[in-house]
Length: 232
Image 1: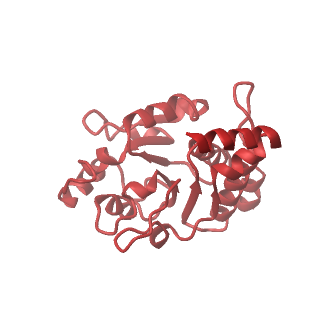
Image 2 (image 1 turned 90 degrees about the vertical axis):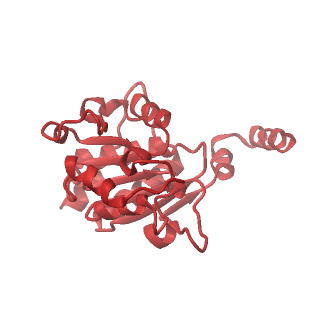
């Protein structure tokens, strides 16, 4: 019953937004379907410019409205990306959104929201190149959130660190292990030391800008764009 309800939940639509592109719909539908079937680690590979954040918003919207998920953490690696996401793609959910601030947040009131945004660095206490005692990181998290508080975590640009086996990002994801976790990236990393697939599994959907542009533009216009791109 829950699976059917979530799959039938419509996309968000309004006069101020556009309906998802065909490739965004595929990514959204596959994600929603996989979560409804109990999959808890998912990887979406979407080229820069194909609307990863908007796709994430539609996934979050459908999961919230269907009642399948109620506490969602969105992790990004740059402050301007967090602010931009809140103000633009996620604007329809502004009343239930909170941007995490360790120095100001009150544990007694922070739990009243549904969608939380945070920087990787803010949760882990430093930059990707800096080592920090993971116990301090977990202590910070415990002050605000129980390990089972979030039921969905979206990791934007997951190739930047969340899949490193020995990194604090991985420890953060492990702290919230009970949550469904979605990694989103344009450039998944697969090396001896870093593996998105090892953690999130094989991509449930992959798109590239070339195919996306070809579907969006008429034939002649597409060829002209490609010609100009090759000249840059």
